[in-house]
Image (cartoon, rainbow, N blue to C red; front, side):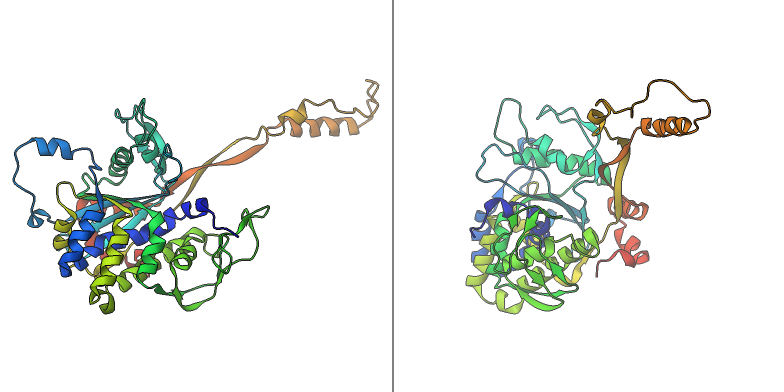
Length: 418
């Protein structure tokens, strides 16, 4: 059956972590291959994602240099699932990640924030958005990307509001760089790498793909899909691009979303390991292809520094110095009245032939009254509102904002994703 374009669009929040790793770590590769540096920088779309580069350029300042990039640093990344066939599509941040790099610039801590995390989204005059004290984080980009009187979405403007919302929630006052990652090219990135090796730690049945990689049909089932399933059995596996991303996106498995987060982090490690493998770094043609493939899926802002500047600044950052941090939390909701049966209550009921007379000795009448009182009580249903992080995870964010994350992690090693 034909592949369906919209199926791929749902991969953003699962494959964006792969793009994150490549964006950060490709810098070291760029330093090694000068020709690839120039081609890669030209391939990456660079834009003002924080809304302040124009103001900075207006004032007198010395040219930016790689040496000016000093730690600690915080890099914000957002993954989107663009509908390329819809020019008026408005983006949502399906994945939000932060890379914290301590002062030595040779280590990094990568963590993700739930897309449904309840945060305060500040007012944003550029889009005419009035703000909300509690809304899902993914919506910040949606509200920010709209411009009054203009139908086409402004992705950079959406990222700007997302950055403001993340700053308010985490306490991180300023992000030193940022990127919007378009998922659509990252299946090709894995293929350009020649595939990746991963250790499947549990049996995973895909709800999205058939064994040959074709999308499964939509249909009536608990998952919304029907037909043969691709199954990933435990053990060491070599994955093509579609397999790697499909495996990492599954959440209807034992462990649910926590297992999916673990598999996403395993995907990041596998991509970084392959990207830093000796055979790739010594093959300029393959390296050039990988870098250009990555670059075509990024919109980058170095806040006055080019991506080459960042490449030199982070040249000592290696896969062994990258720590994946697992944040925990849970759903937030409320009980509301279920009005789905209101129409039924208005329907006339058969009174069983009652003539209106009451037998004083008839105790069944009292039972009927009690039953009626029970029926009159409103039925409730649980309404999901979003996610919230637990206390320890919020303490971790505070340590990031304070620049003391290394000390914090030394006392909380259980937060490191294995």
